[in-house]
Length: 529
Image 1 (cartoon, rainbow, N blue to C red):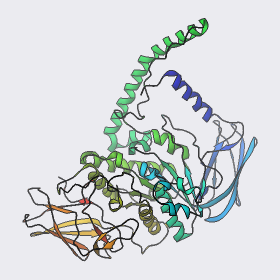
Image 2 (tube, one colour; image 1 turned 180 degrees about the vertical axis):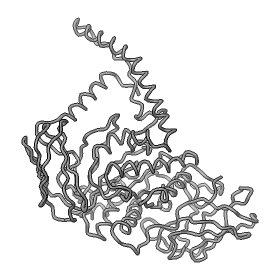
Image 3 (cartoon, rainbow, N blue to C red; image 1 turned 60 degrees about the horizontal axis):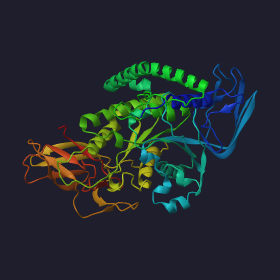
Image 4 (tube, rainbow, N blue to C red; image 1 turned 90 degrees about the vertical axis):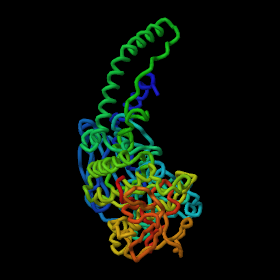
């Protein structure tokens, strides 16, 4: 909606007040008591002091001296440290004062991003017993304050909280269950750094530079440039109205007359308006303020707001590649910094049409392709734990623990553990049959049902959710049987099947294929029709 000049002027004043250089030395908002610092890599510590002021940062045996720049910002880098469950003091001393943070641990920090299913708190997950037992002093949580921002914001607000029954209810549930499993199996302190907002598309979470300069995103960049150009024209048009209004206000103040209402003013184009690109403002407001905080990796649950037909969903692959490259660049971890994400859960009423191929099915297919497109990535399948009536399924426990499987294998050395359910490899026509092969199926395959947090239970019935088609591209439900780590498909009405789809709808209720490690198969398709 349009904002008045008074509204924008107030925001400008608040922005300047928030970002001015304070006389007393201070740390960035992400540094508070009870925080977790990243182990085994240099740790940037930054804040503000008077320009040119000498500042010393001390932690453990390390003492780093630096100076604030002309803008008042200083940064010191603590040397690589080993994990420690013993709370220590982080001391920052300048000529204008000092800051002492207490109970600081050293462990692994995971940045949890995305939309509402990542933002969803533990106390809304029908998990009162988990909240009541959440006594984990080595698990800490920080929530970046909500902020859409038209320009990169320099700082954020929030507090690191120790995980207790009194605090855990407000933690990101996915992040909590991830941290709980990892800490239980490794003993390493875990920091959960949450930066997520419901109903947000992926373009909001990457920098303007990345969106503008990534060749694969040029159609979107073109739209951004056009929006900026239009906005500048609107500004030029409305400035004269503002000047006129300002003169009238001065005259009214001088004469004691009523103040005239302000004119409408064009809103910054990358905000929340849907008919212009919704992009970059959450990077500006909720990612930029925590850069370059040292992290061990990223957890990502998002995609509902990017669902669309395949040409649209296919773009999500390039957008996620750009986001991951963006974050890895700014957080300094390189291509090996892990990025683990959640495939969309089931939602809405099941559609029993074998030809169904809705927007969420296409988005899941894009997410599956992201596994190969993005190095050091992992995907947690969640189609078996959704809720037909709620886009926010309560079972976040399985989601967090499935993400943790990837981290435990690839980061924490649990090399023999399975990390994923069956992933489609290839479909081979064999006369009247179609033979489907899978990765992550060494333990064998099973048809199973899952009830809540309980492990899937094998069924005597055959696997469901497979649709096949011949050259005429008419889809029919297939008869399926398991053959070791393969699935054999056939259909009496299809003489020579050539293509397969599995679980390819927003709520694939028929899909029930698991590996014998108890992890569900990802929905997929072999066709490109």
